[in-house]
Image 1 (spheres, rainbow, N blue to C red):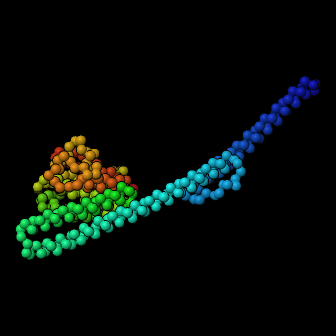
Image 2: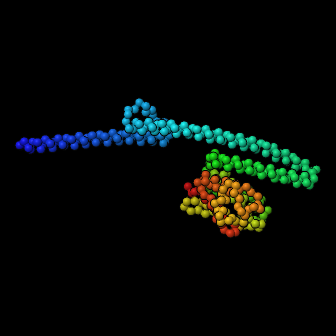
Length: 312
């Protein structure tokens, strides 16, 4: 082997050594980077699962230790914010409960006094006195109604209501709601047509969904004509179980399809009927908490309200 070959061989070996060293360094750095990413991943996983993070103050000055230290600070901030939110939520719940108590107590006393006066006036009172008493009783009932619904709205809007969904017969919930409006319907001689199965078990909160159904049925009866008709049906598809409540009453204007679900909104055609524009708003909020939908369709005459619950 001459000198030239020796030099070429030495240069090749030197180059191979450099490449082997570089490859080793690359593998080492890659392995170290994988370890750092694994530590960061474990830290994020502990953080998202709500577990307490270890103290990283004694860690060496590596990239993963810096990131994990920042994650620890972020967790401390989030925990503090969560505690503040829970405290504010509790204080708000207590405030609403106190307001409810302070409003209900005088209203209950007022009702008791009015009942006592009613007995006396019916025995000895004059016709004008009886008329005045009925007007006062009517006003008291309206104030009580508004108070209860304002309290419900406040609790719903501030997330203080817990929907307790259980698999129940949806038709039983409907029957309970119907029972609350039958007297009103009989006075107007309204007839009901049903297209319902014998049973239909769906996940829902019977109390709150019952209130939503009552509000829809109450509107259907209130805005139906004398000797009117209301059709109630139940359909299913792959995603939803849907109640349909169809009346043949005064209906709504085309531009009011979304407006009627706003708080205190009253349709242009309902000026002759008593109401506060609360029922549909509450019903939609209740459906929202059920992860469901409440929609309206103009039919002329009347409207069709569709209450849809997700199938689970």
